[in-house]
Every structure is written in C-alpha cells, then in structure tokens.
Image (cartoon, rainbow, N blue to C red; front, side, top):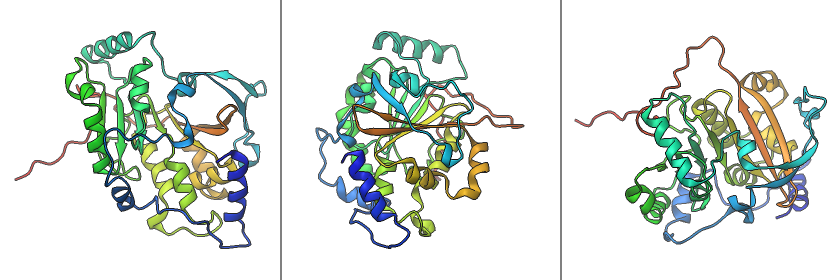
Amino acid sequence: MSLSTRHFFDRIQNSSLTKFRLPSPPYYDPSYWDRAYKDATPDDCIEWGGFDLNRLLKFRWERISLDEFGFASNDVAEEKEGTSTFAEWLDIQQHESPEEASSAYQQRKLSNDSSNDAILLLGCGNSKMGEQLLIHSFQGPFLQLDVSSKLIQCMTQRYDKYLKEAAVKRMEFIVDDATELTSLEPNSVGGAVIDKGLFDGLHCALPNVNLEIDDGKDSIRKIMESVHRVLQPSRPFVFFSRSSPKYMLRRSFGDDYEIEERRRRWKDVSVIKLVDLDVMLYRFVKAEENNEDVNLRVTTRAFRMKKRPKRN
C-alpha cells in the first residue's frame, strides 16, 4: 500500500463524522498471532512493507514538518532532505566487517564496559532483519522479540548456527508481549529499539483515533511506555509506517493535553519520508532522566533480563 492510498483510508477510518471501520485482523490480540503462525516453518519469511535492511543501508529522505503537532524544530538550519544510512539514524556504529563487530563486542564484554549496543526488534515475526544487522557489521547483540512462542521456536531453528555454533553469540530470541516487555529490565537497551510493522499493523486494527479506546486495546501507547522503560537515556526508538504524523503521533502520545509530558519523556521527535521506499521513518529519542541514579551496567549476558524466581 502506498502513502497516498494509506492516507485515503486513514481519512475514511478516522473521520470524526463516522464510526466506519475498515476490516482488519485483531493484531492487538496475542492469541491471533498464535493462530497466524500455527503452520509456520523456519523457512517462511515475510518482510512488512516489501523491504528489508538492504534497502535501508543507504537511502534518500525528506523531513516531515511537525510544527503543527507541537514538535517545532529548534534548529533553523536543520536539513530538509538528504541521503543517510540506517546506522546514522540509529546513532550506532556500523563496523567495517562482521569480524570487526564481533571483536568489538567481545572486547566490550571482557572489559566489563557498562555500555552496550543492544538492538531490540519488536514483533520480529519471521523477518530477516536481525540476521541482516549482524551480517552488515552492527555490533549488537540483537534481541528479537515476539509474542508468539510458535514463531520464536521457528526462528531459533532457522538461526541455530548463530545460537549454538557461533564462537561469539550475539543473537537472542525472546517470547514476550511488546506492551509489557517484562523480560527486560529498565534502562537495559543501550543501542536502539526498532519496530518494522508492529505499530503500523496495530494502527490499522485499532478504532478511529477520535474515539475512546478501551484499556484492553490501547496497545500502541502501552508499547510506548514499555519501550521508554527499557531504553537507556538518549537512545532512539525507530519505527516505520505508511500513516502520516497526523494519526501516528496521536496514536503514540495521546491528545494535546499530554504534549508537555511527552516532551519531557522524549527529547527529540522526528519523522522523515524514505523517498524510494514510500514509507515514513519515525524516530523518538528518550530524554535524560533527571535527578535519578540510573544504573546502566549490564551483566555478562548481552542484556539484562530480569531474574525469574526459583521454583520450589
């Protein structure tokens, strides 16, 4: 679906004059994904939007003005368009080779460095983005998370060579709900959080943005809360959508009365159009935590997962 087609459907579905809803699967219901992946195999692969990381390594972009949404830029010289890399928008180093990235990861781990370049992939599905990040020399580790245990089982079978055979293990798979992220501790993700399709799918499945959403279906704002909790300060949350900021910012942050609160929690909000992919990239950077003693240290594992209580 193109940006223009999505805009047309968004206008219909989110009109304040109608309660009309376009048919859409209940993406907000975890049980839906168990049914969807019931017959999945390790070889299956679906890339939301029809693009993968190879199309993001270098791309042309145009900045979308957010002035009308209360996110006016403070930089009058800010570029309106350009050519960039995904690494630049993630603010993460892309090494010269996978071997160099692996070596840098090992050195950091052995030196007990408190920082990390962990990249969390929300609703990873059976996309190959995690593997592509590794192949294209990002350091990681790469934490691929999905609510479907069946899907995660398929992915662990597909990537057995990275999980068991690799001398340096930089890939993890986690069964968890993105609205909660209970398996990750606060401030534990030091690289970035990436969503390639989850927000977009939820937006299409949720009711009109002008209508009250019951607590059980307010998935996008719940994910915003959980992502904010696990990200380290000054690190970005990046997601892709074909819906405009008029809809996605309201989905993400709520109504106007919440503007000051969201500015306090996210110090930078930007949206760009990826010209050749006909999709928008949203980037929210977590604000610094004032007057709080934040422990950014990681354990010997790539990221800090909460310790589960011992069974009696």
